[in-house]
Length: 138
Image 1 (cartoon, one colour):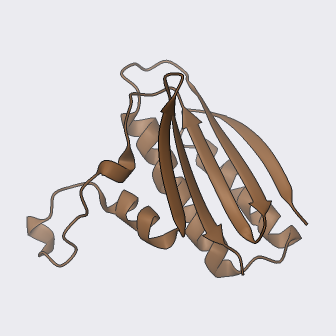
Image 2: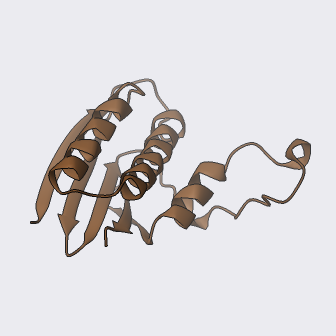
């Protein structure tokens, strides 16, 4: 059974838990594995934290839209925001073999997202960032 849901959020860290709850509900309804749910929740947490903390030049409230879909054996999340243009897929891959004290701060969340997801895509459309991540469920 396929499913689509749109979740409007504000740029508040507390909103991330609500998204995670919905991902887990979809997982329960469709008997998705814990591995798939963990990967999607981690990716969404990293993406949303980056948007909320680094995406805006002001302290105003902004809308972030998360679209979840389960179709053709793939769980997909599309995150749309009106923040500063930023393609996280252009971020350099961190050297995870370097000693901790030599690693720069940041970048690990995007790296985890790219490696845990089966597909990641970014586009800028109508002054909005749209990042799509997908995980195969079978």
